Length: 172
Image (cartoon, rainbow, N blue to C red):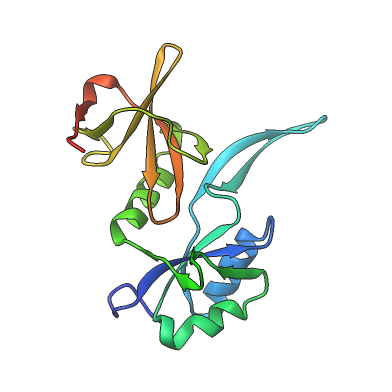
């Protein structure tokens, strides 16, 4: 098992549809350090409403491993499809991106829906609050300002609510 202080790296694995929690649990049981950002949402059925934990990014689980020693253990886990990367080379995810995800998961009231691409807009940095020093792209939707936080390493973004006065433009 590789822990974050032992020199491994973060990678993203693509998993079978709706298997994120199961794969995360199997990783934990087998000693693989993994991270699955979850958000609590209210789901409604015909007869009831219930709070459920849903993945921030459907189909993905993050693992912290020494690729040479542990990649087969990850790939042999039930529900894992493949490592995410360019061609056959898995992409390394930076510690800063993982910390972003951890912060986003801790601040569910600020998060909207996930988005697949970043809309055209201005790059900004957050001056204060739980997202201090984070950078992203701003999108105006109606009367509410939204900041899209885009993670290059996983090619996805998350839309969060933020006060416009907490944003400062960043030179590209």
